[in-house]
Length: 625
Image 1: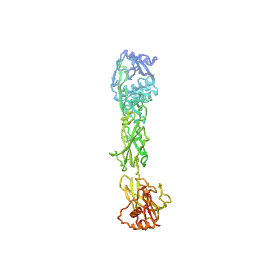
Image 2: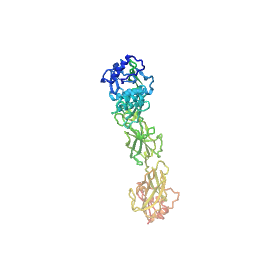
Image 3: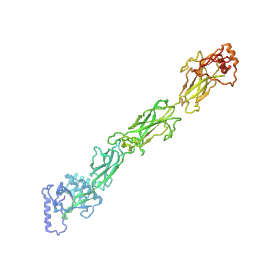
Image 4: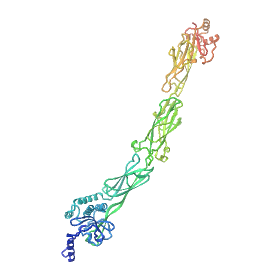
């Protein structure tokens, strides 16, 4: 504080005042050493600061430790007052009657609030210089009055530079203040980062203000994030860990922000400097809502284990579990799988896979399962994150098309409290990758018809889902002549001669073939039916040597020949007799032979030979040598 005096205001100064001024001048010229704890007027004591060439530059404190700084540099120091009043609060007015602007009041308040209570001598000296620059007439920085004082006092350059910097910082960091909170997107582990700024009037972060954070809801400050801090020149970051499901809030309070005003004390003597005591402070706060976890949308794509298989086999579904993209259009990668807050354990859900079929036609892609669609059954698979899973198998019982669909019910979530955070999901019906086809297995039953010509009655079953022809053909291959009735075997012997072939359409139902070629050599002949298969049906081949498909031709005697000749020709309209059922007994009596020959032995069959029926369960013809 300056130990200063007023210049004489007129030539009529009283002798008493002149004497006082002389004594004061002598004391200033030869001051006795003064400790910082020396008492001064009004109970204030010199504290942190420095003794410059002519003035004490620093702070005063009272018995309660309250710090104060002098203003009105042109007036006398506090030592000259016997006391101070109880104080005044508001916008400050200089001793010449000029009022500080709102920005100057806010800067002065910031200056006292941030650095006023310092116990550092150099800092206190810098604060006092900055206070004089703001409150004393003619003492602004770079003014003639300030330049004169700085030259006279010969203050250290770093103290002056720091005082200038304090003044600039006070203007930049002054209020009114706002507390700004922004929340970053949650991290993969659910941690939310809050970025807190205590902003000055210019919108920039203000330093030196104590702040405190309070959380509500299922959140806690992460390790390393303190609940209280002092603002700095940049924004403060807080890590908030989710401890449970639900929403919450973050409230940040700055309980003491310097307002545009100060508190000062008036001396009992009007020619003594006033004392600036404290900044006027007011609380500032802001709150931010922390949203609940977003609804979690799992998704499933699948492929069946077999695109084509046989009836009676089991198929399963291969699930590719993922996360559906967020509704805001972000990528699925940015949406984490739902975890249990606090433990980090993933929430599990149940995927229900239903196998539909058999269907008579390939399913058509559509959103919902058509009403009345038959099903084989359903299986459930519990999943707890993105990846590939396999379901249990289901047996496809018969030919047709089968297709999987999948669904997810939120109620299946574990733990149960996570159900509110899972969205139901339903897959489409008729997806190609989820479709399995079981081909039809044709059955072909044939029977040789021995009449005026030898033909085959062909009964087909299992050709596709309807009785309509499927477009293919069944080949009837007659092998012979063979030396004896063939034994039953699965495949055609390599040395079996092919006699002739005819075809019929592949169809469900009974059809009659065209005639086989005429017999010209004695022996036995047998027919094999084959079908190569098609898109809907498997291949088929009958056994070689089926009794119902075997006919034998043998040479006849002269008597038999004459008898047979008398029986032919048979009128074309005569009924056609079918071959005997396999295994049924057939008589070898001449009368029987003649009768059967008459119904089936025409010259075209044996190329002019007399033919008779022989055999035990075989349709046989005998030829004269």
